[in-house]
Image (cartoon, rainbow over all chains, first blue to last red; front, side, top):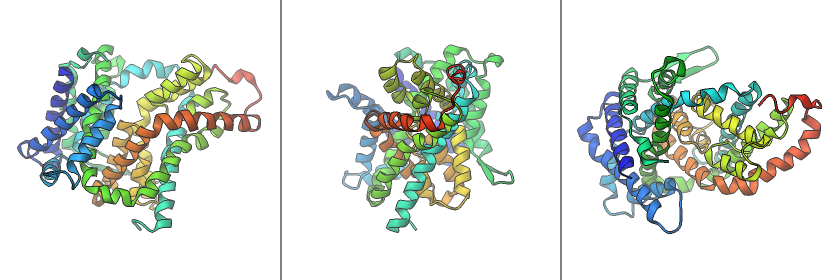
Length: 147
Length: 272
């Protein structure tokens, strides 16, 4: 747990730098928001660990984040206001940087694959994206929402 | 995952440099004739990071790459927290889109099978096709296949192949695809955002990034709806894969294989 907390703090600091360079929000303005984001994440991991019924961490983190920003939660407006200082794209950049740095480890496995499976992978990802977008679009056109 | 498998200053330092450099470069769009490709910081970070990790360059050790992968696994939770905080105030709007949001999940789960399975059969794959196309083959899906058929079965090899390709190229490929689909003008940004909730963190992040670059005025809505769809896909994922996706893929395989499958048996096995 201690290493996880340290890692989140580390990523938080890196994201604050990205948020500063890419979105012109000074780290001092974004710090309170980032602290809330890190705190909610750590709490999510904590609940996932102690709760008797095992639920995935992602559900705990999402539900906590949702809860404290819904209009029914006291002080939600100020939480929303400070966390808005952290751009969601700024938080995604370090994540994809870690993804990039782990690329090499699967390369050996990849070289063993045939071309068919590579083609099918792209088809599979295209299928899930295309069909769900299409269904959502049809849904919106039928109900007239967002159009 | 071992706790000490997260500690590595070299990796964090590389990420810090990558983030500063790529955020400094910022968003660039290139027109390549059939449409513009949107390039943005997280995509550069992914590509430059991948180059740094190339084994032939000997910059990172395998152990360090594994640590980067472990950090990736938990770092996504910060992004989930941020998305949750965007969603909270917009809950009424999310519920308003509830019907489309619910229905499009059918597209997420059926899309891999309906498009993937026939093409896999046409290319001459046999039982590998079931593992490859029943889902997007992320970790939870691999576990389902391994439990039912074993990791070294044809189904297991098919699933693992898509898993490896997805880990390496999924985010990059999908963000380019999202860019192109956004530029056709056929889809509302929110429809595309829901489509981006494929159930993988890095893929969803890269896709919503691409969409946000093309529709800057809808950036917040894109994050909200991509996050909501991704959350539903993740929560329902395991159950739907066990009770619907896998039986349905097997059913379709039985129906389609005699029609689309290639006769020669020598094709199978060796090309996975």
